[in-house]
Image (tube, rainbow, N blue to C red; front, side, top):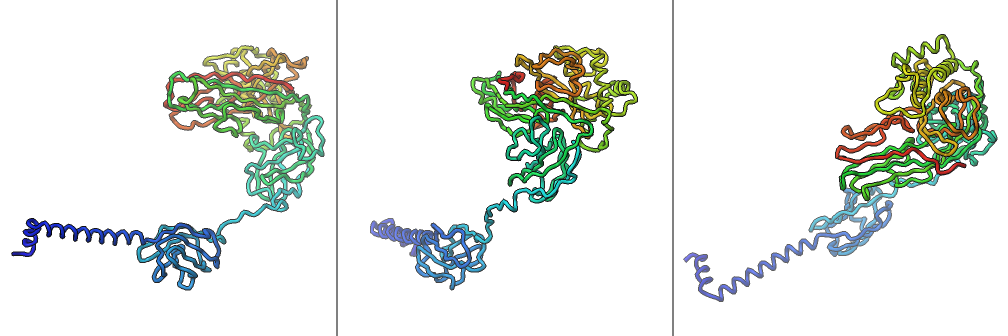
Length: 564
């Protein structure tokens, strides 16, 4: 009988054979499982390592288990290189000590034995780690060595030479003594406050910036006195510059400070809709006439609060409590009365027609139809043979204030500014935009301004005016609507508005935007809302994602909370 058949026969017939067989199988299984388990357990495990960051020559201690009682063929590997036998000072099953070699690199550390390699731990050579060096003010604070030329006119480029200005401008700034009443020409930068005016990024005052030279235009509103550079490292000691005014010097006086609140209300009409809208709420603008704008309060926190022109919110309509939410901002804004004192006969033609500022201020844009044939032909007829930008601006102003009637109620609906040419009447928006358009058509740099007009009873209404730019002078304020007789209750009576508002401005004008701002959609399929004839010029006020089904918004005119 075959042995296998013999075994099967007795396995079936004899209980003893069956018991012995099962016992042997159990023993074999236990032995096999023990071998496997022992092999697994023997794989080395690193529990800690000290130091994790070290230098060549340092002693490293690795603790854990299953390293083996003797090193034999086991090893430690750092960044792909095994430590030589002479590098170990101790080896036991739970601890290894070794001396880091001179060529040790950053990398993974393994312990290897005949049972396999441990999980790795990272080591870093401290010689390759950058160490923060404490800045030495003597070599990091900006230093002005000279200003060339040290006598200049508004709008003229000067070179500030020195050290530690930085490789690029970034958020660094140049400050000039401000041309305002009661300000000393020797004021210290530490007492800045209302005493200094910053060169303007919006008006392209900065031409170039490197570590040893800054080329910058003397900004509108600057006066003779101190100039200093401010970087993230600190402020330089000031240098003196003389600012000359061959075309006349504006005076800024009668400062008033206002607390102004802007607000917007959103109401969702579909409960629980998971969709997003963005709000672009304009901020008051900074200029030489309105040099100080400080955020006082903002509820709720904006999505972007440091944008130059707007407070930007993003709202998930599904998370709006009770389907309604209000957004409020309050600002402390200082504004000045401005008198032009211009010498009109001294104003010459533009020399720098290739500057970005001039090209922007003489071209058409979404609200200024300067290239429209009806506008350009009218400008040509009004200007005639006049060459001086001042004469052109004055002739256009006289024509509009004498031939166009201004109406107090804002026009609404699908209306165009160009209507005023034929109808000879329009609101304050029409008057300002048409004046800027005719100036630009005649080659005169002009910037429309949108904001609010504060009445003597502290009520406000949206309002629009214009600033005209003359070289070697600066920005020249013009309000054709008030010059044409728009009703307005000023704090101080103005005897001849038609004459006053060509070159002068009261502190009751608060600007929210100077010129057109083109805001890009965040996505091509969003729904946008544009608000015409409002207190700022911008292409988008609200932007809704494609999923938005229904909501309503109420944009309130800015209100005055206090006057100081």
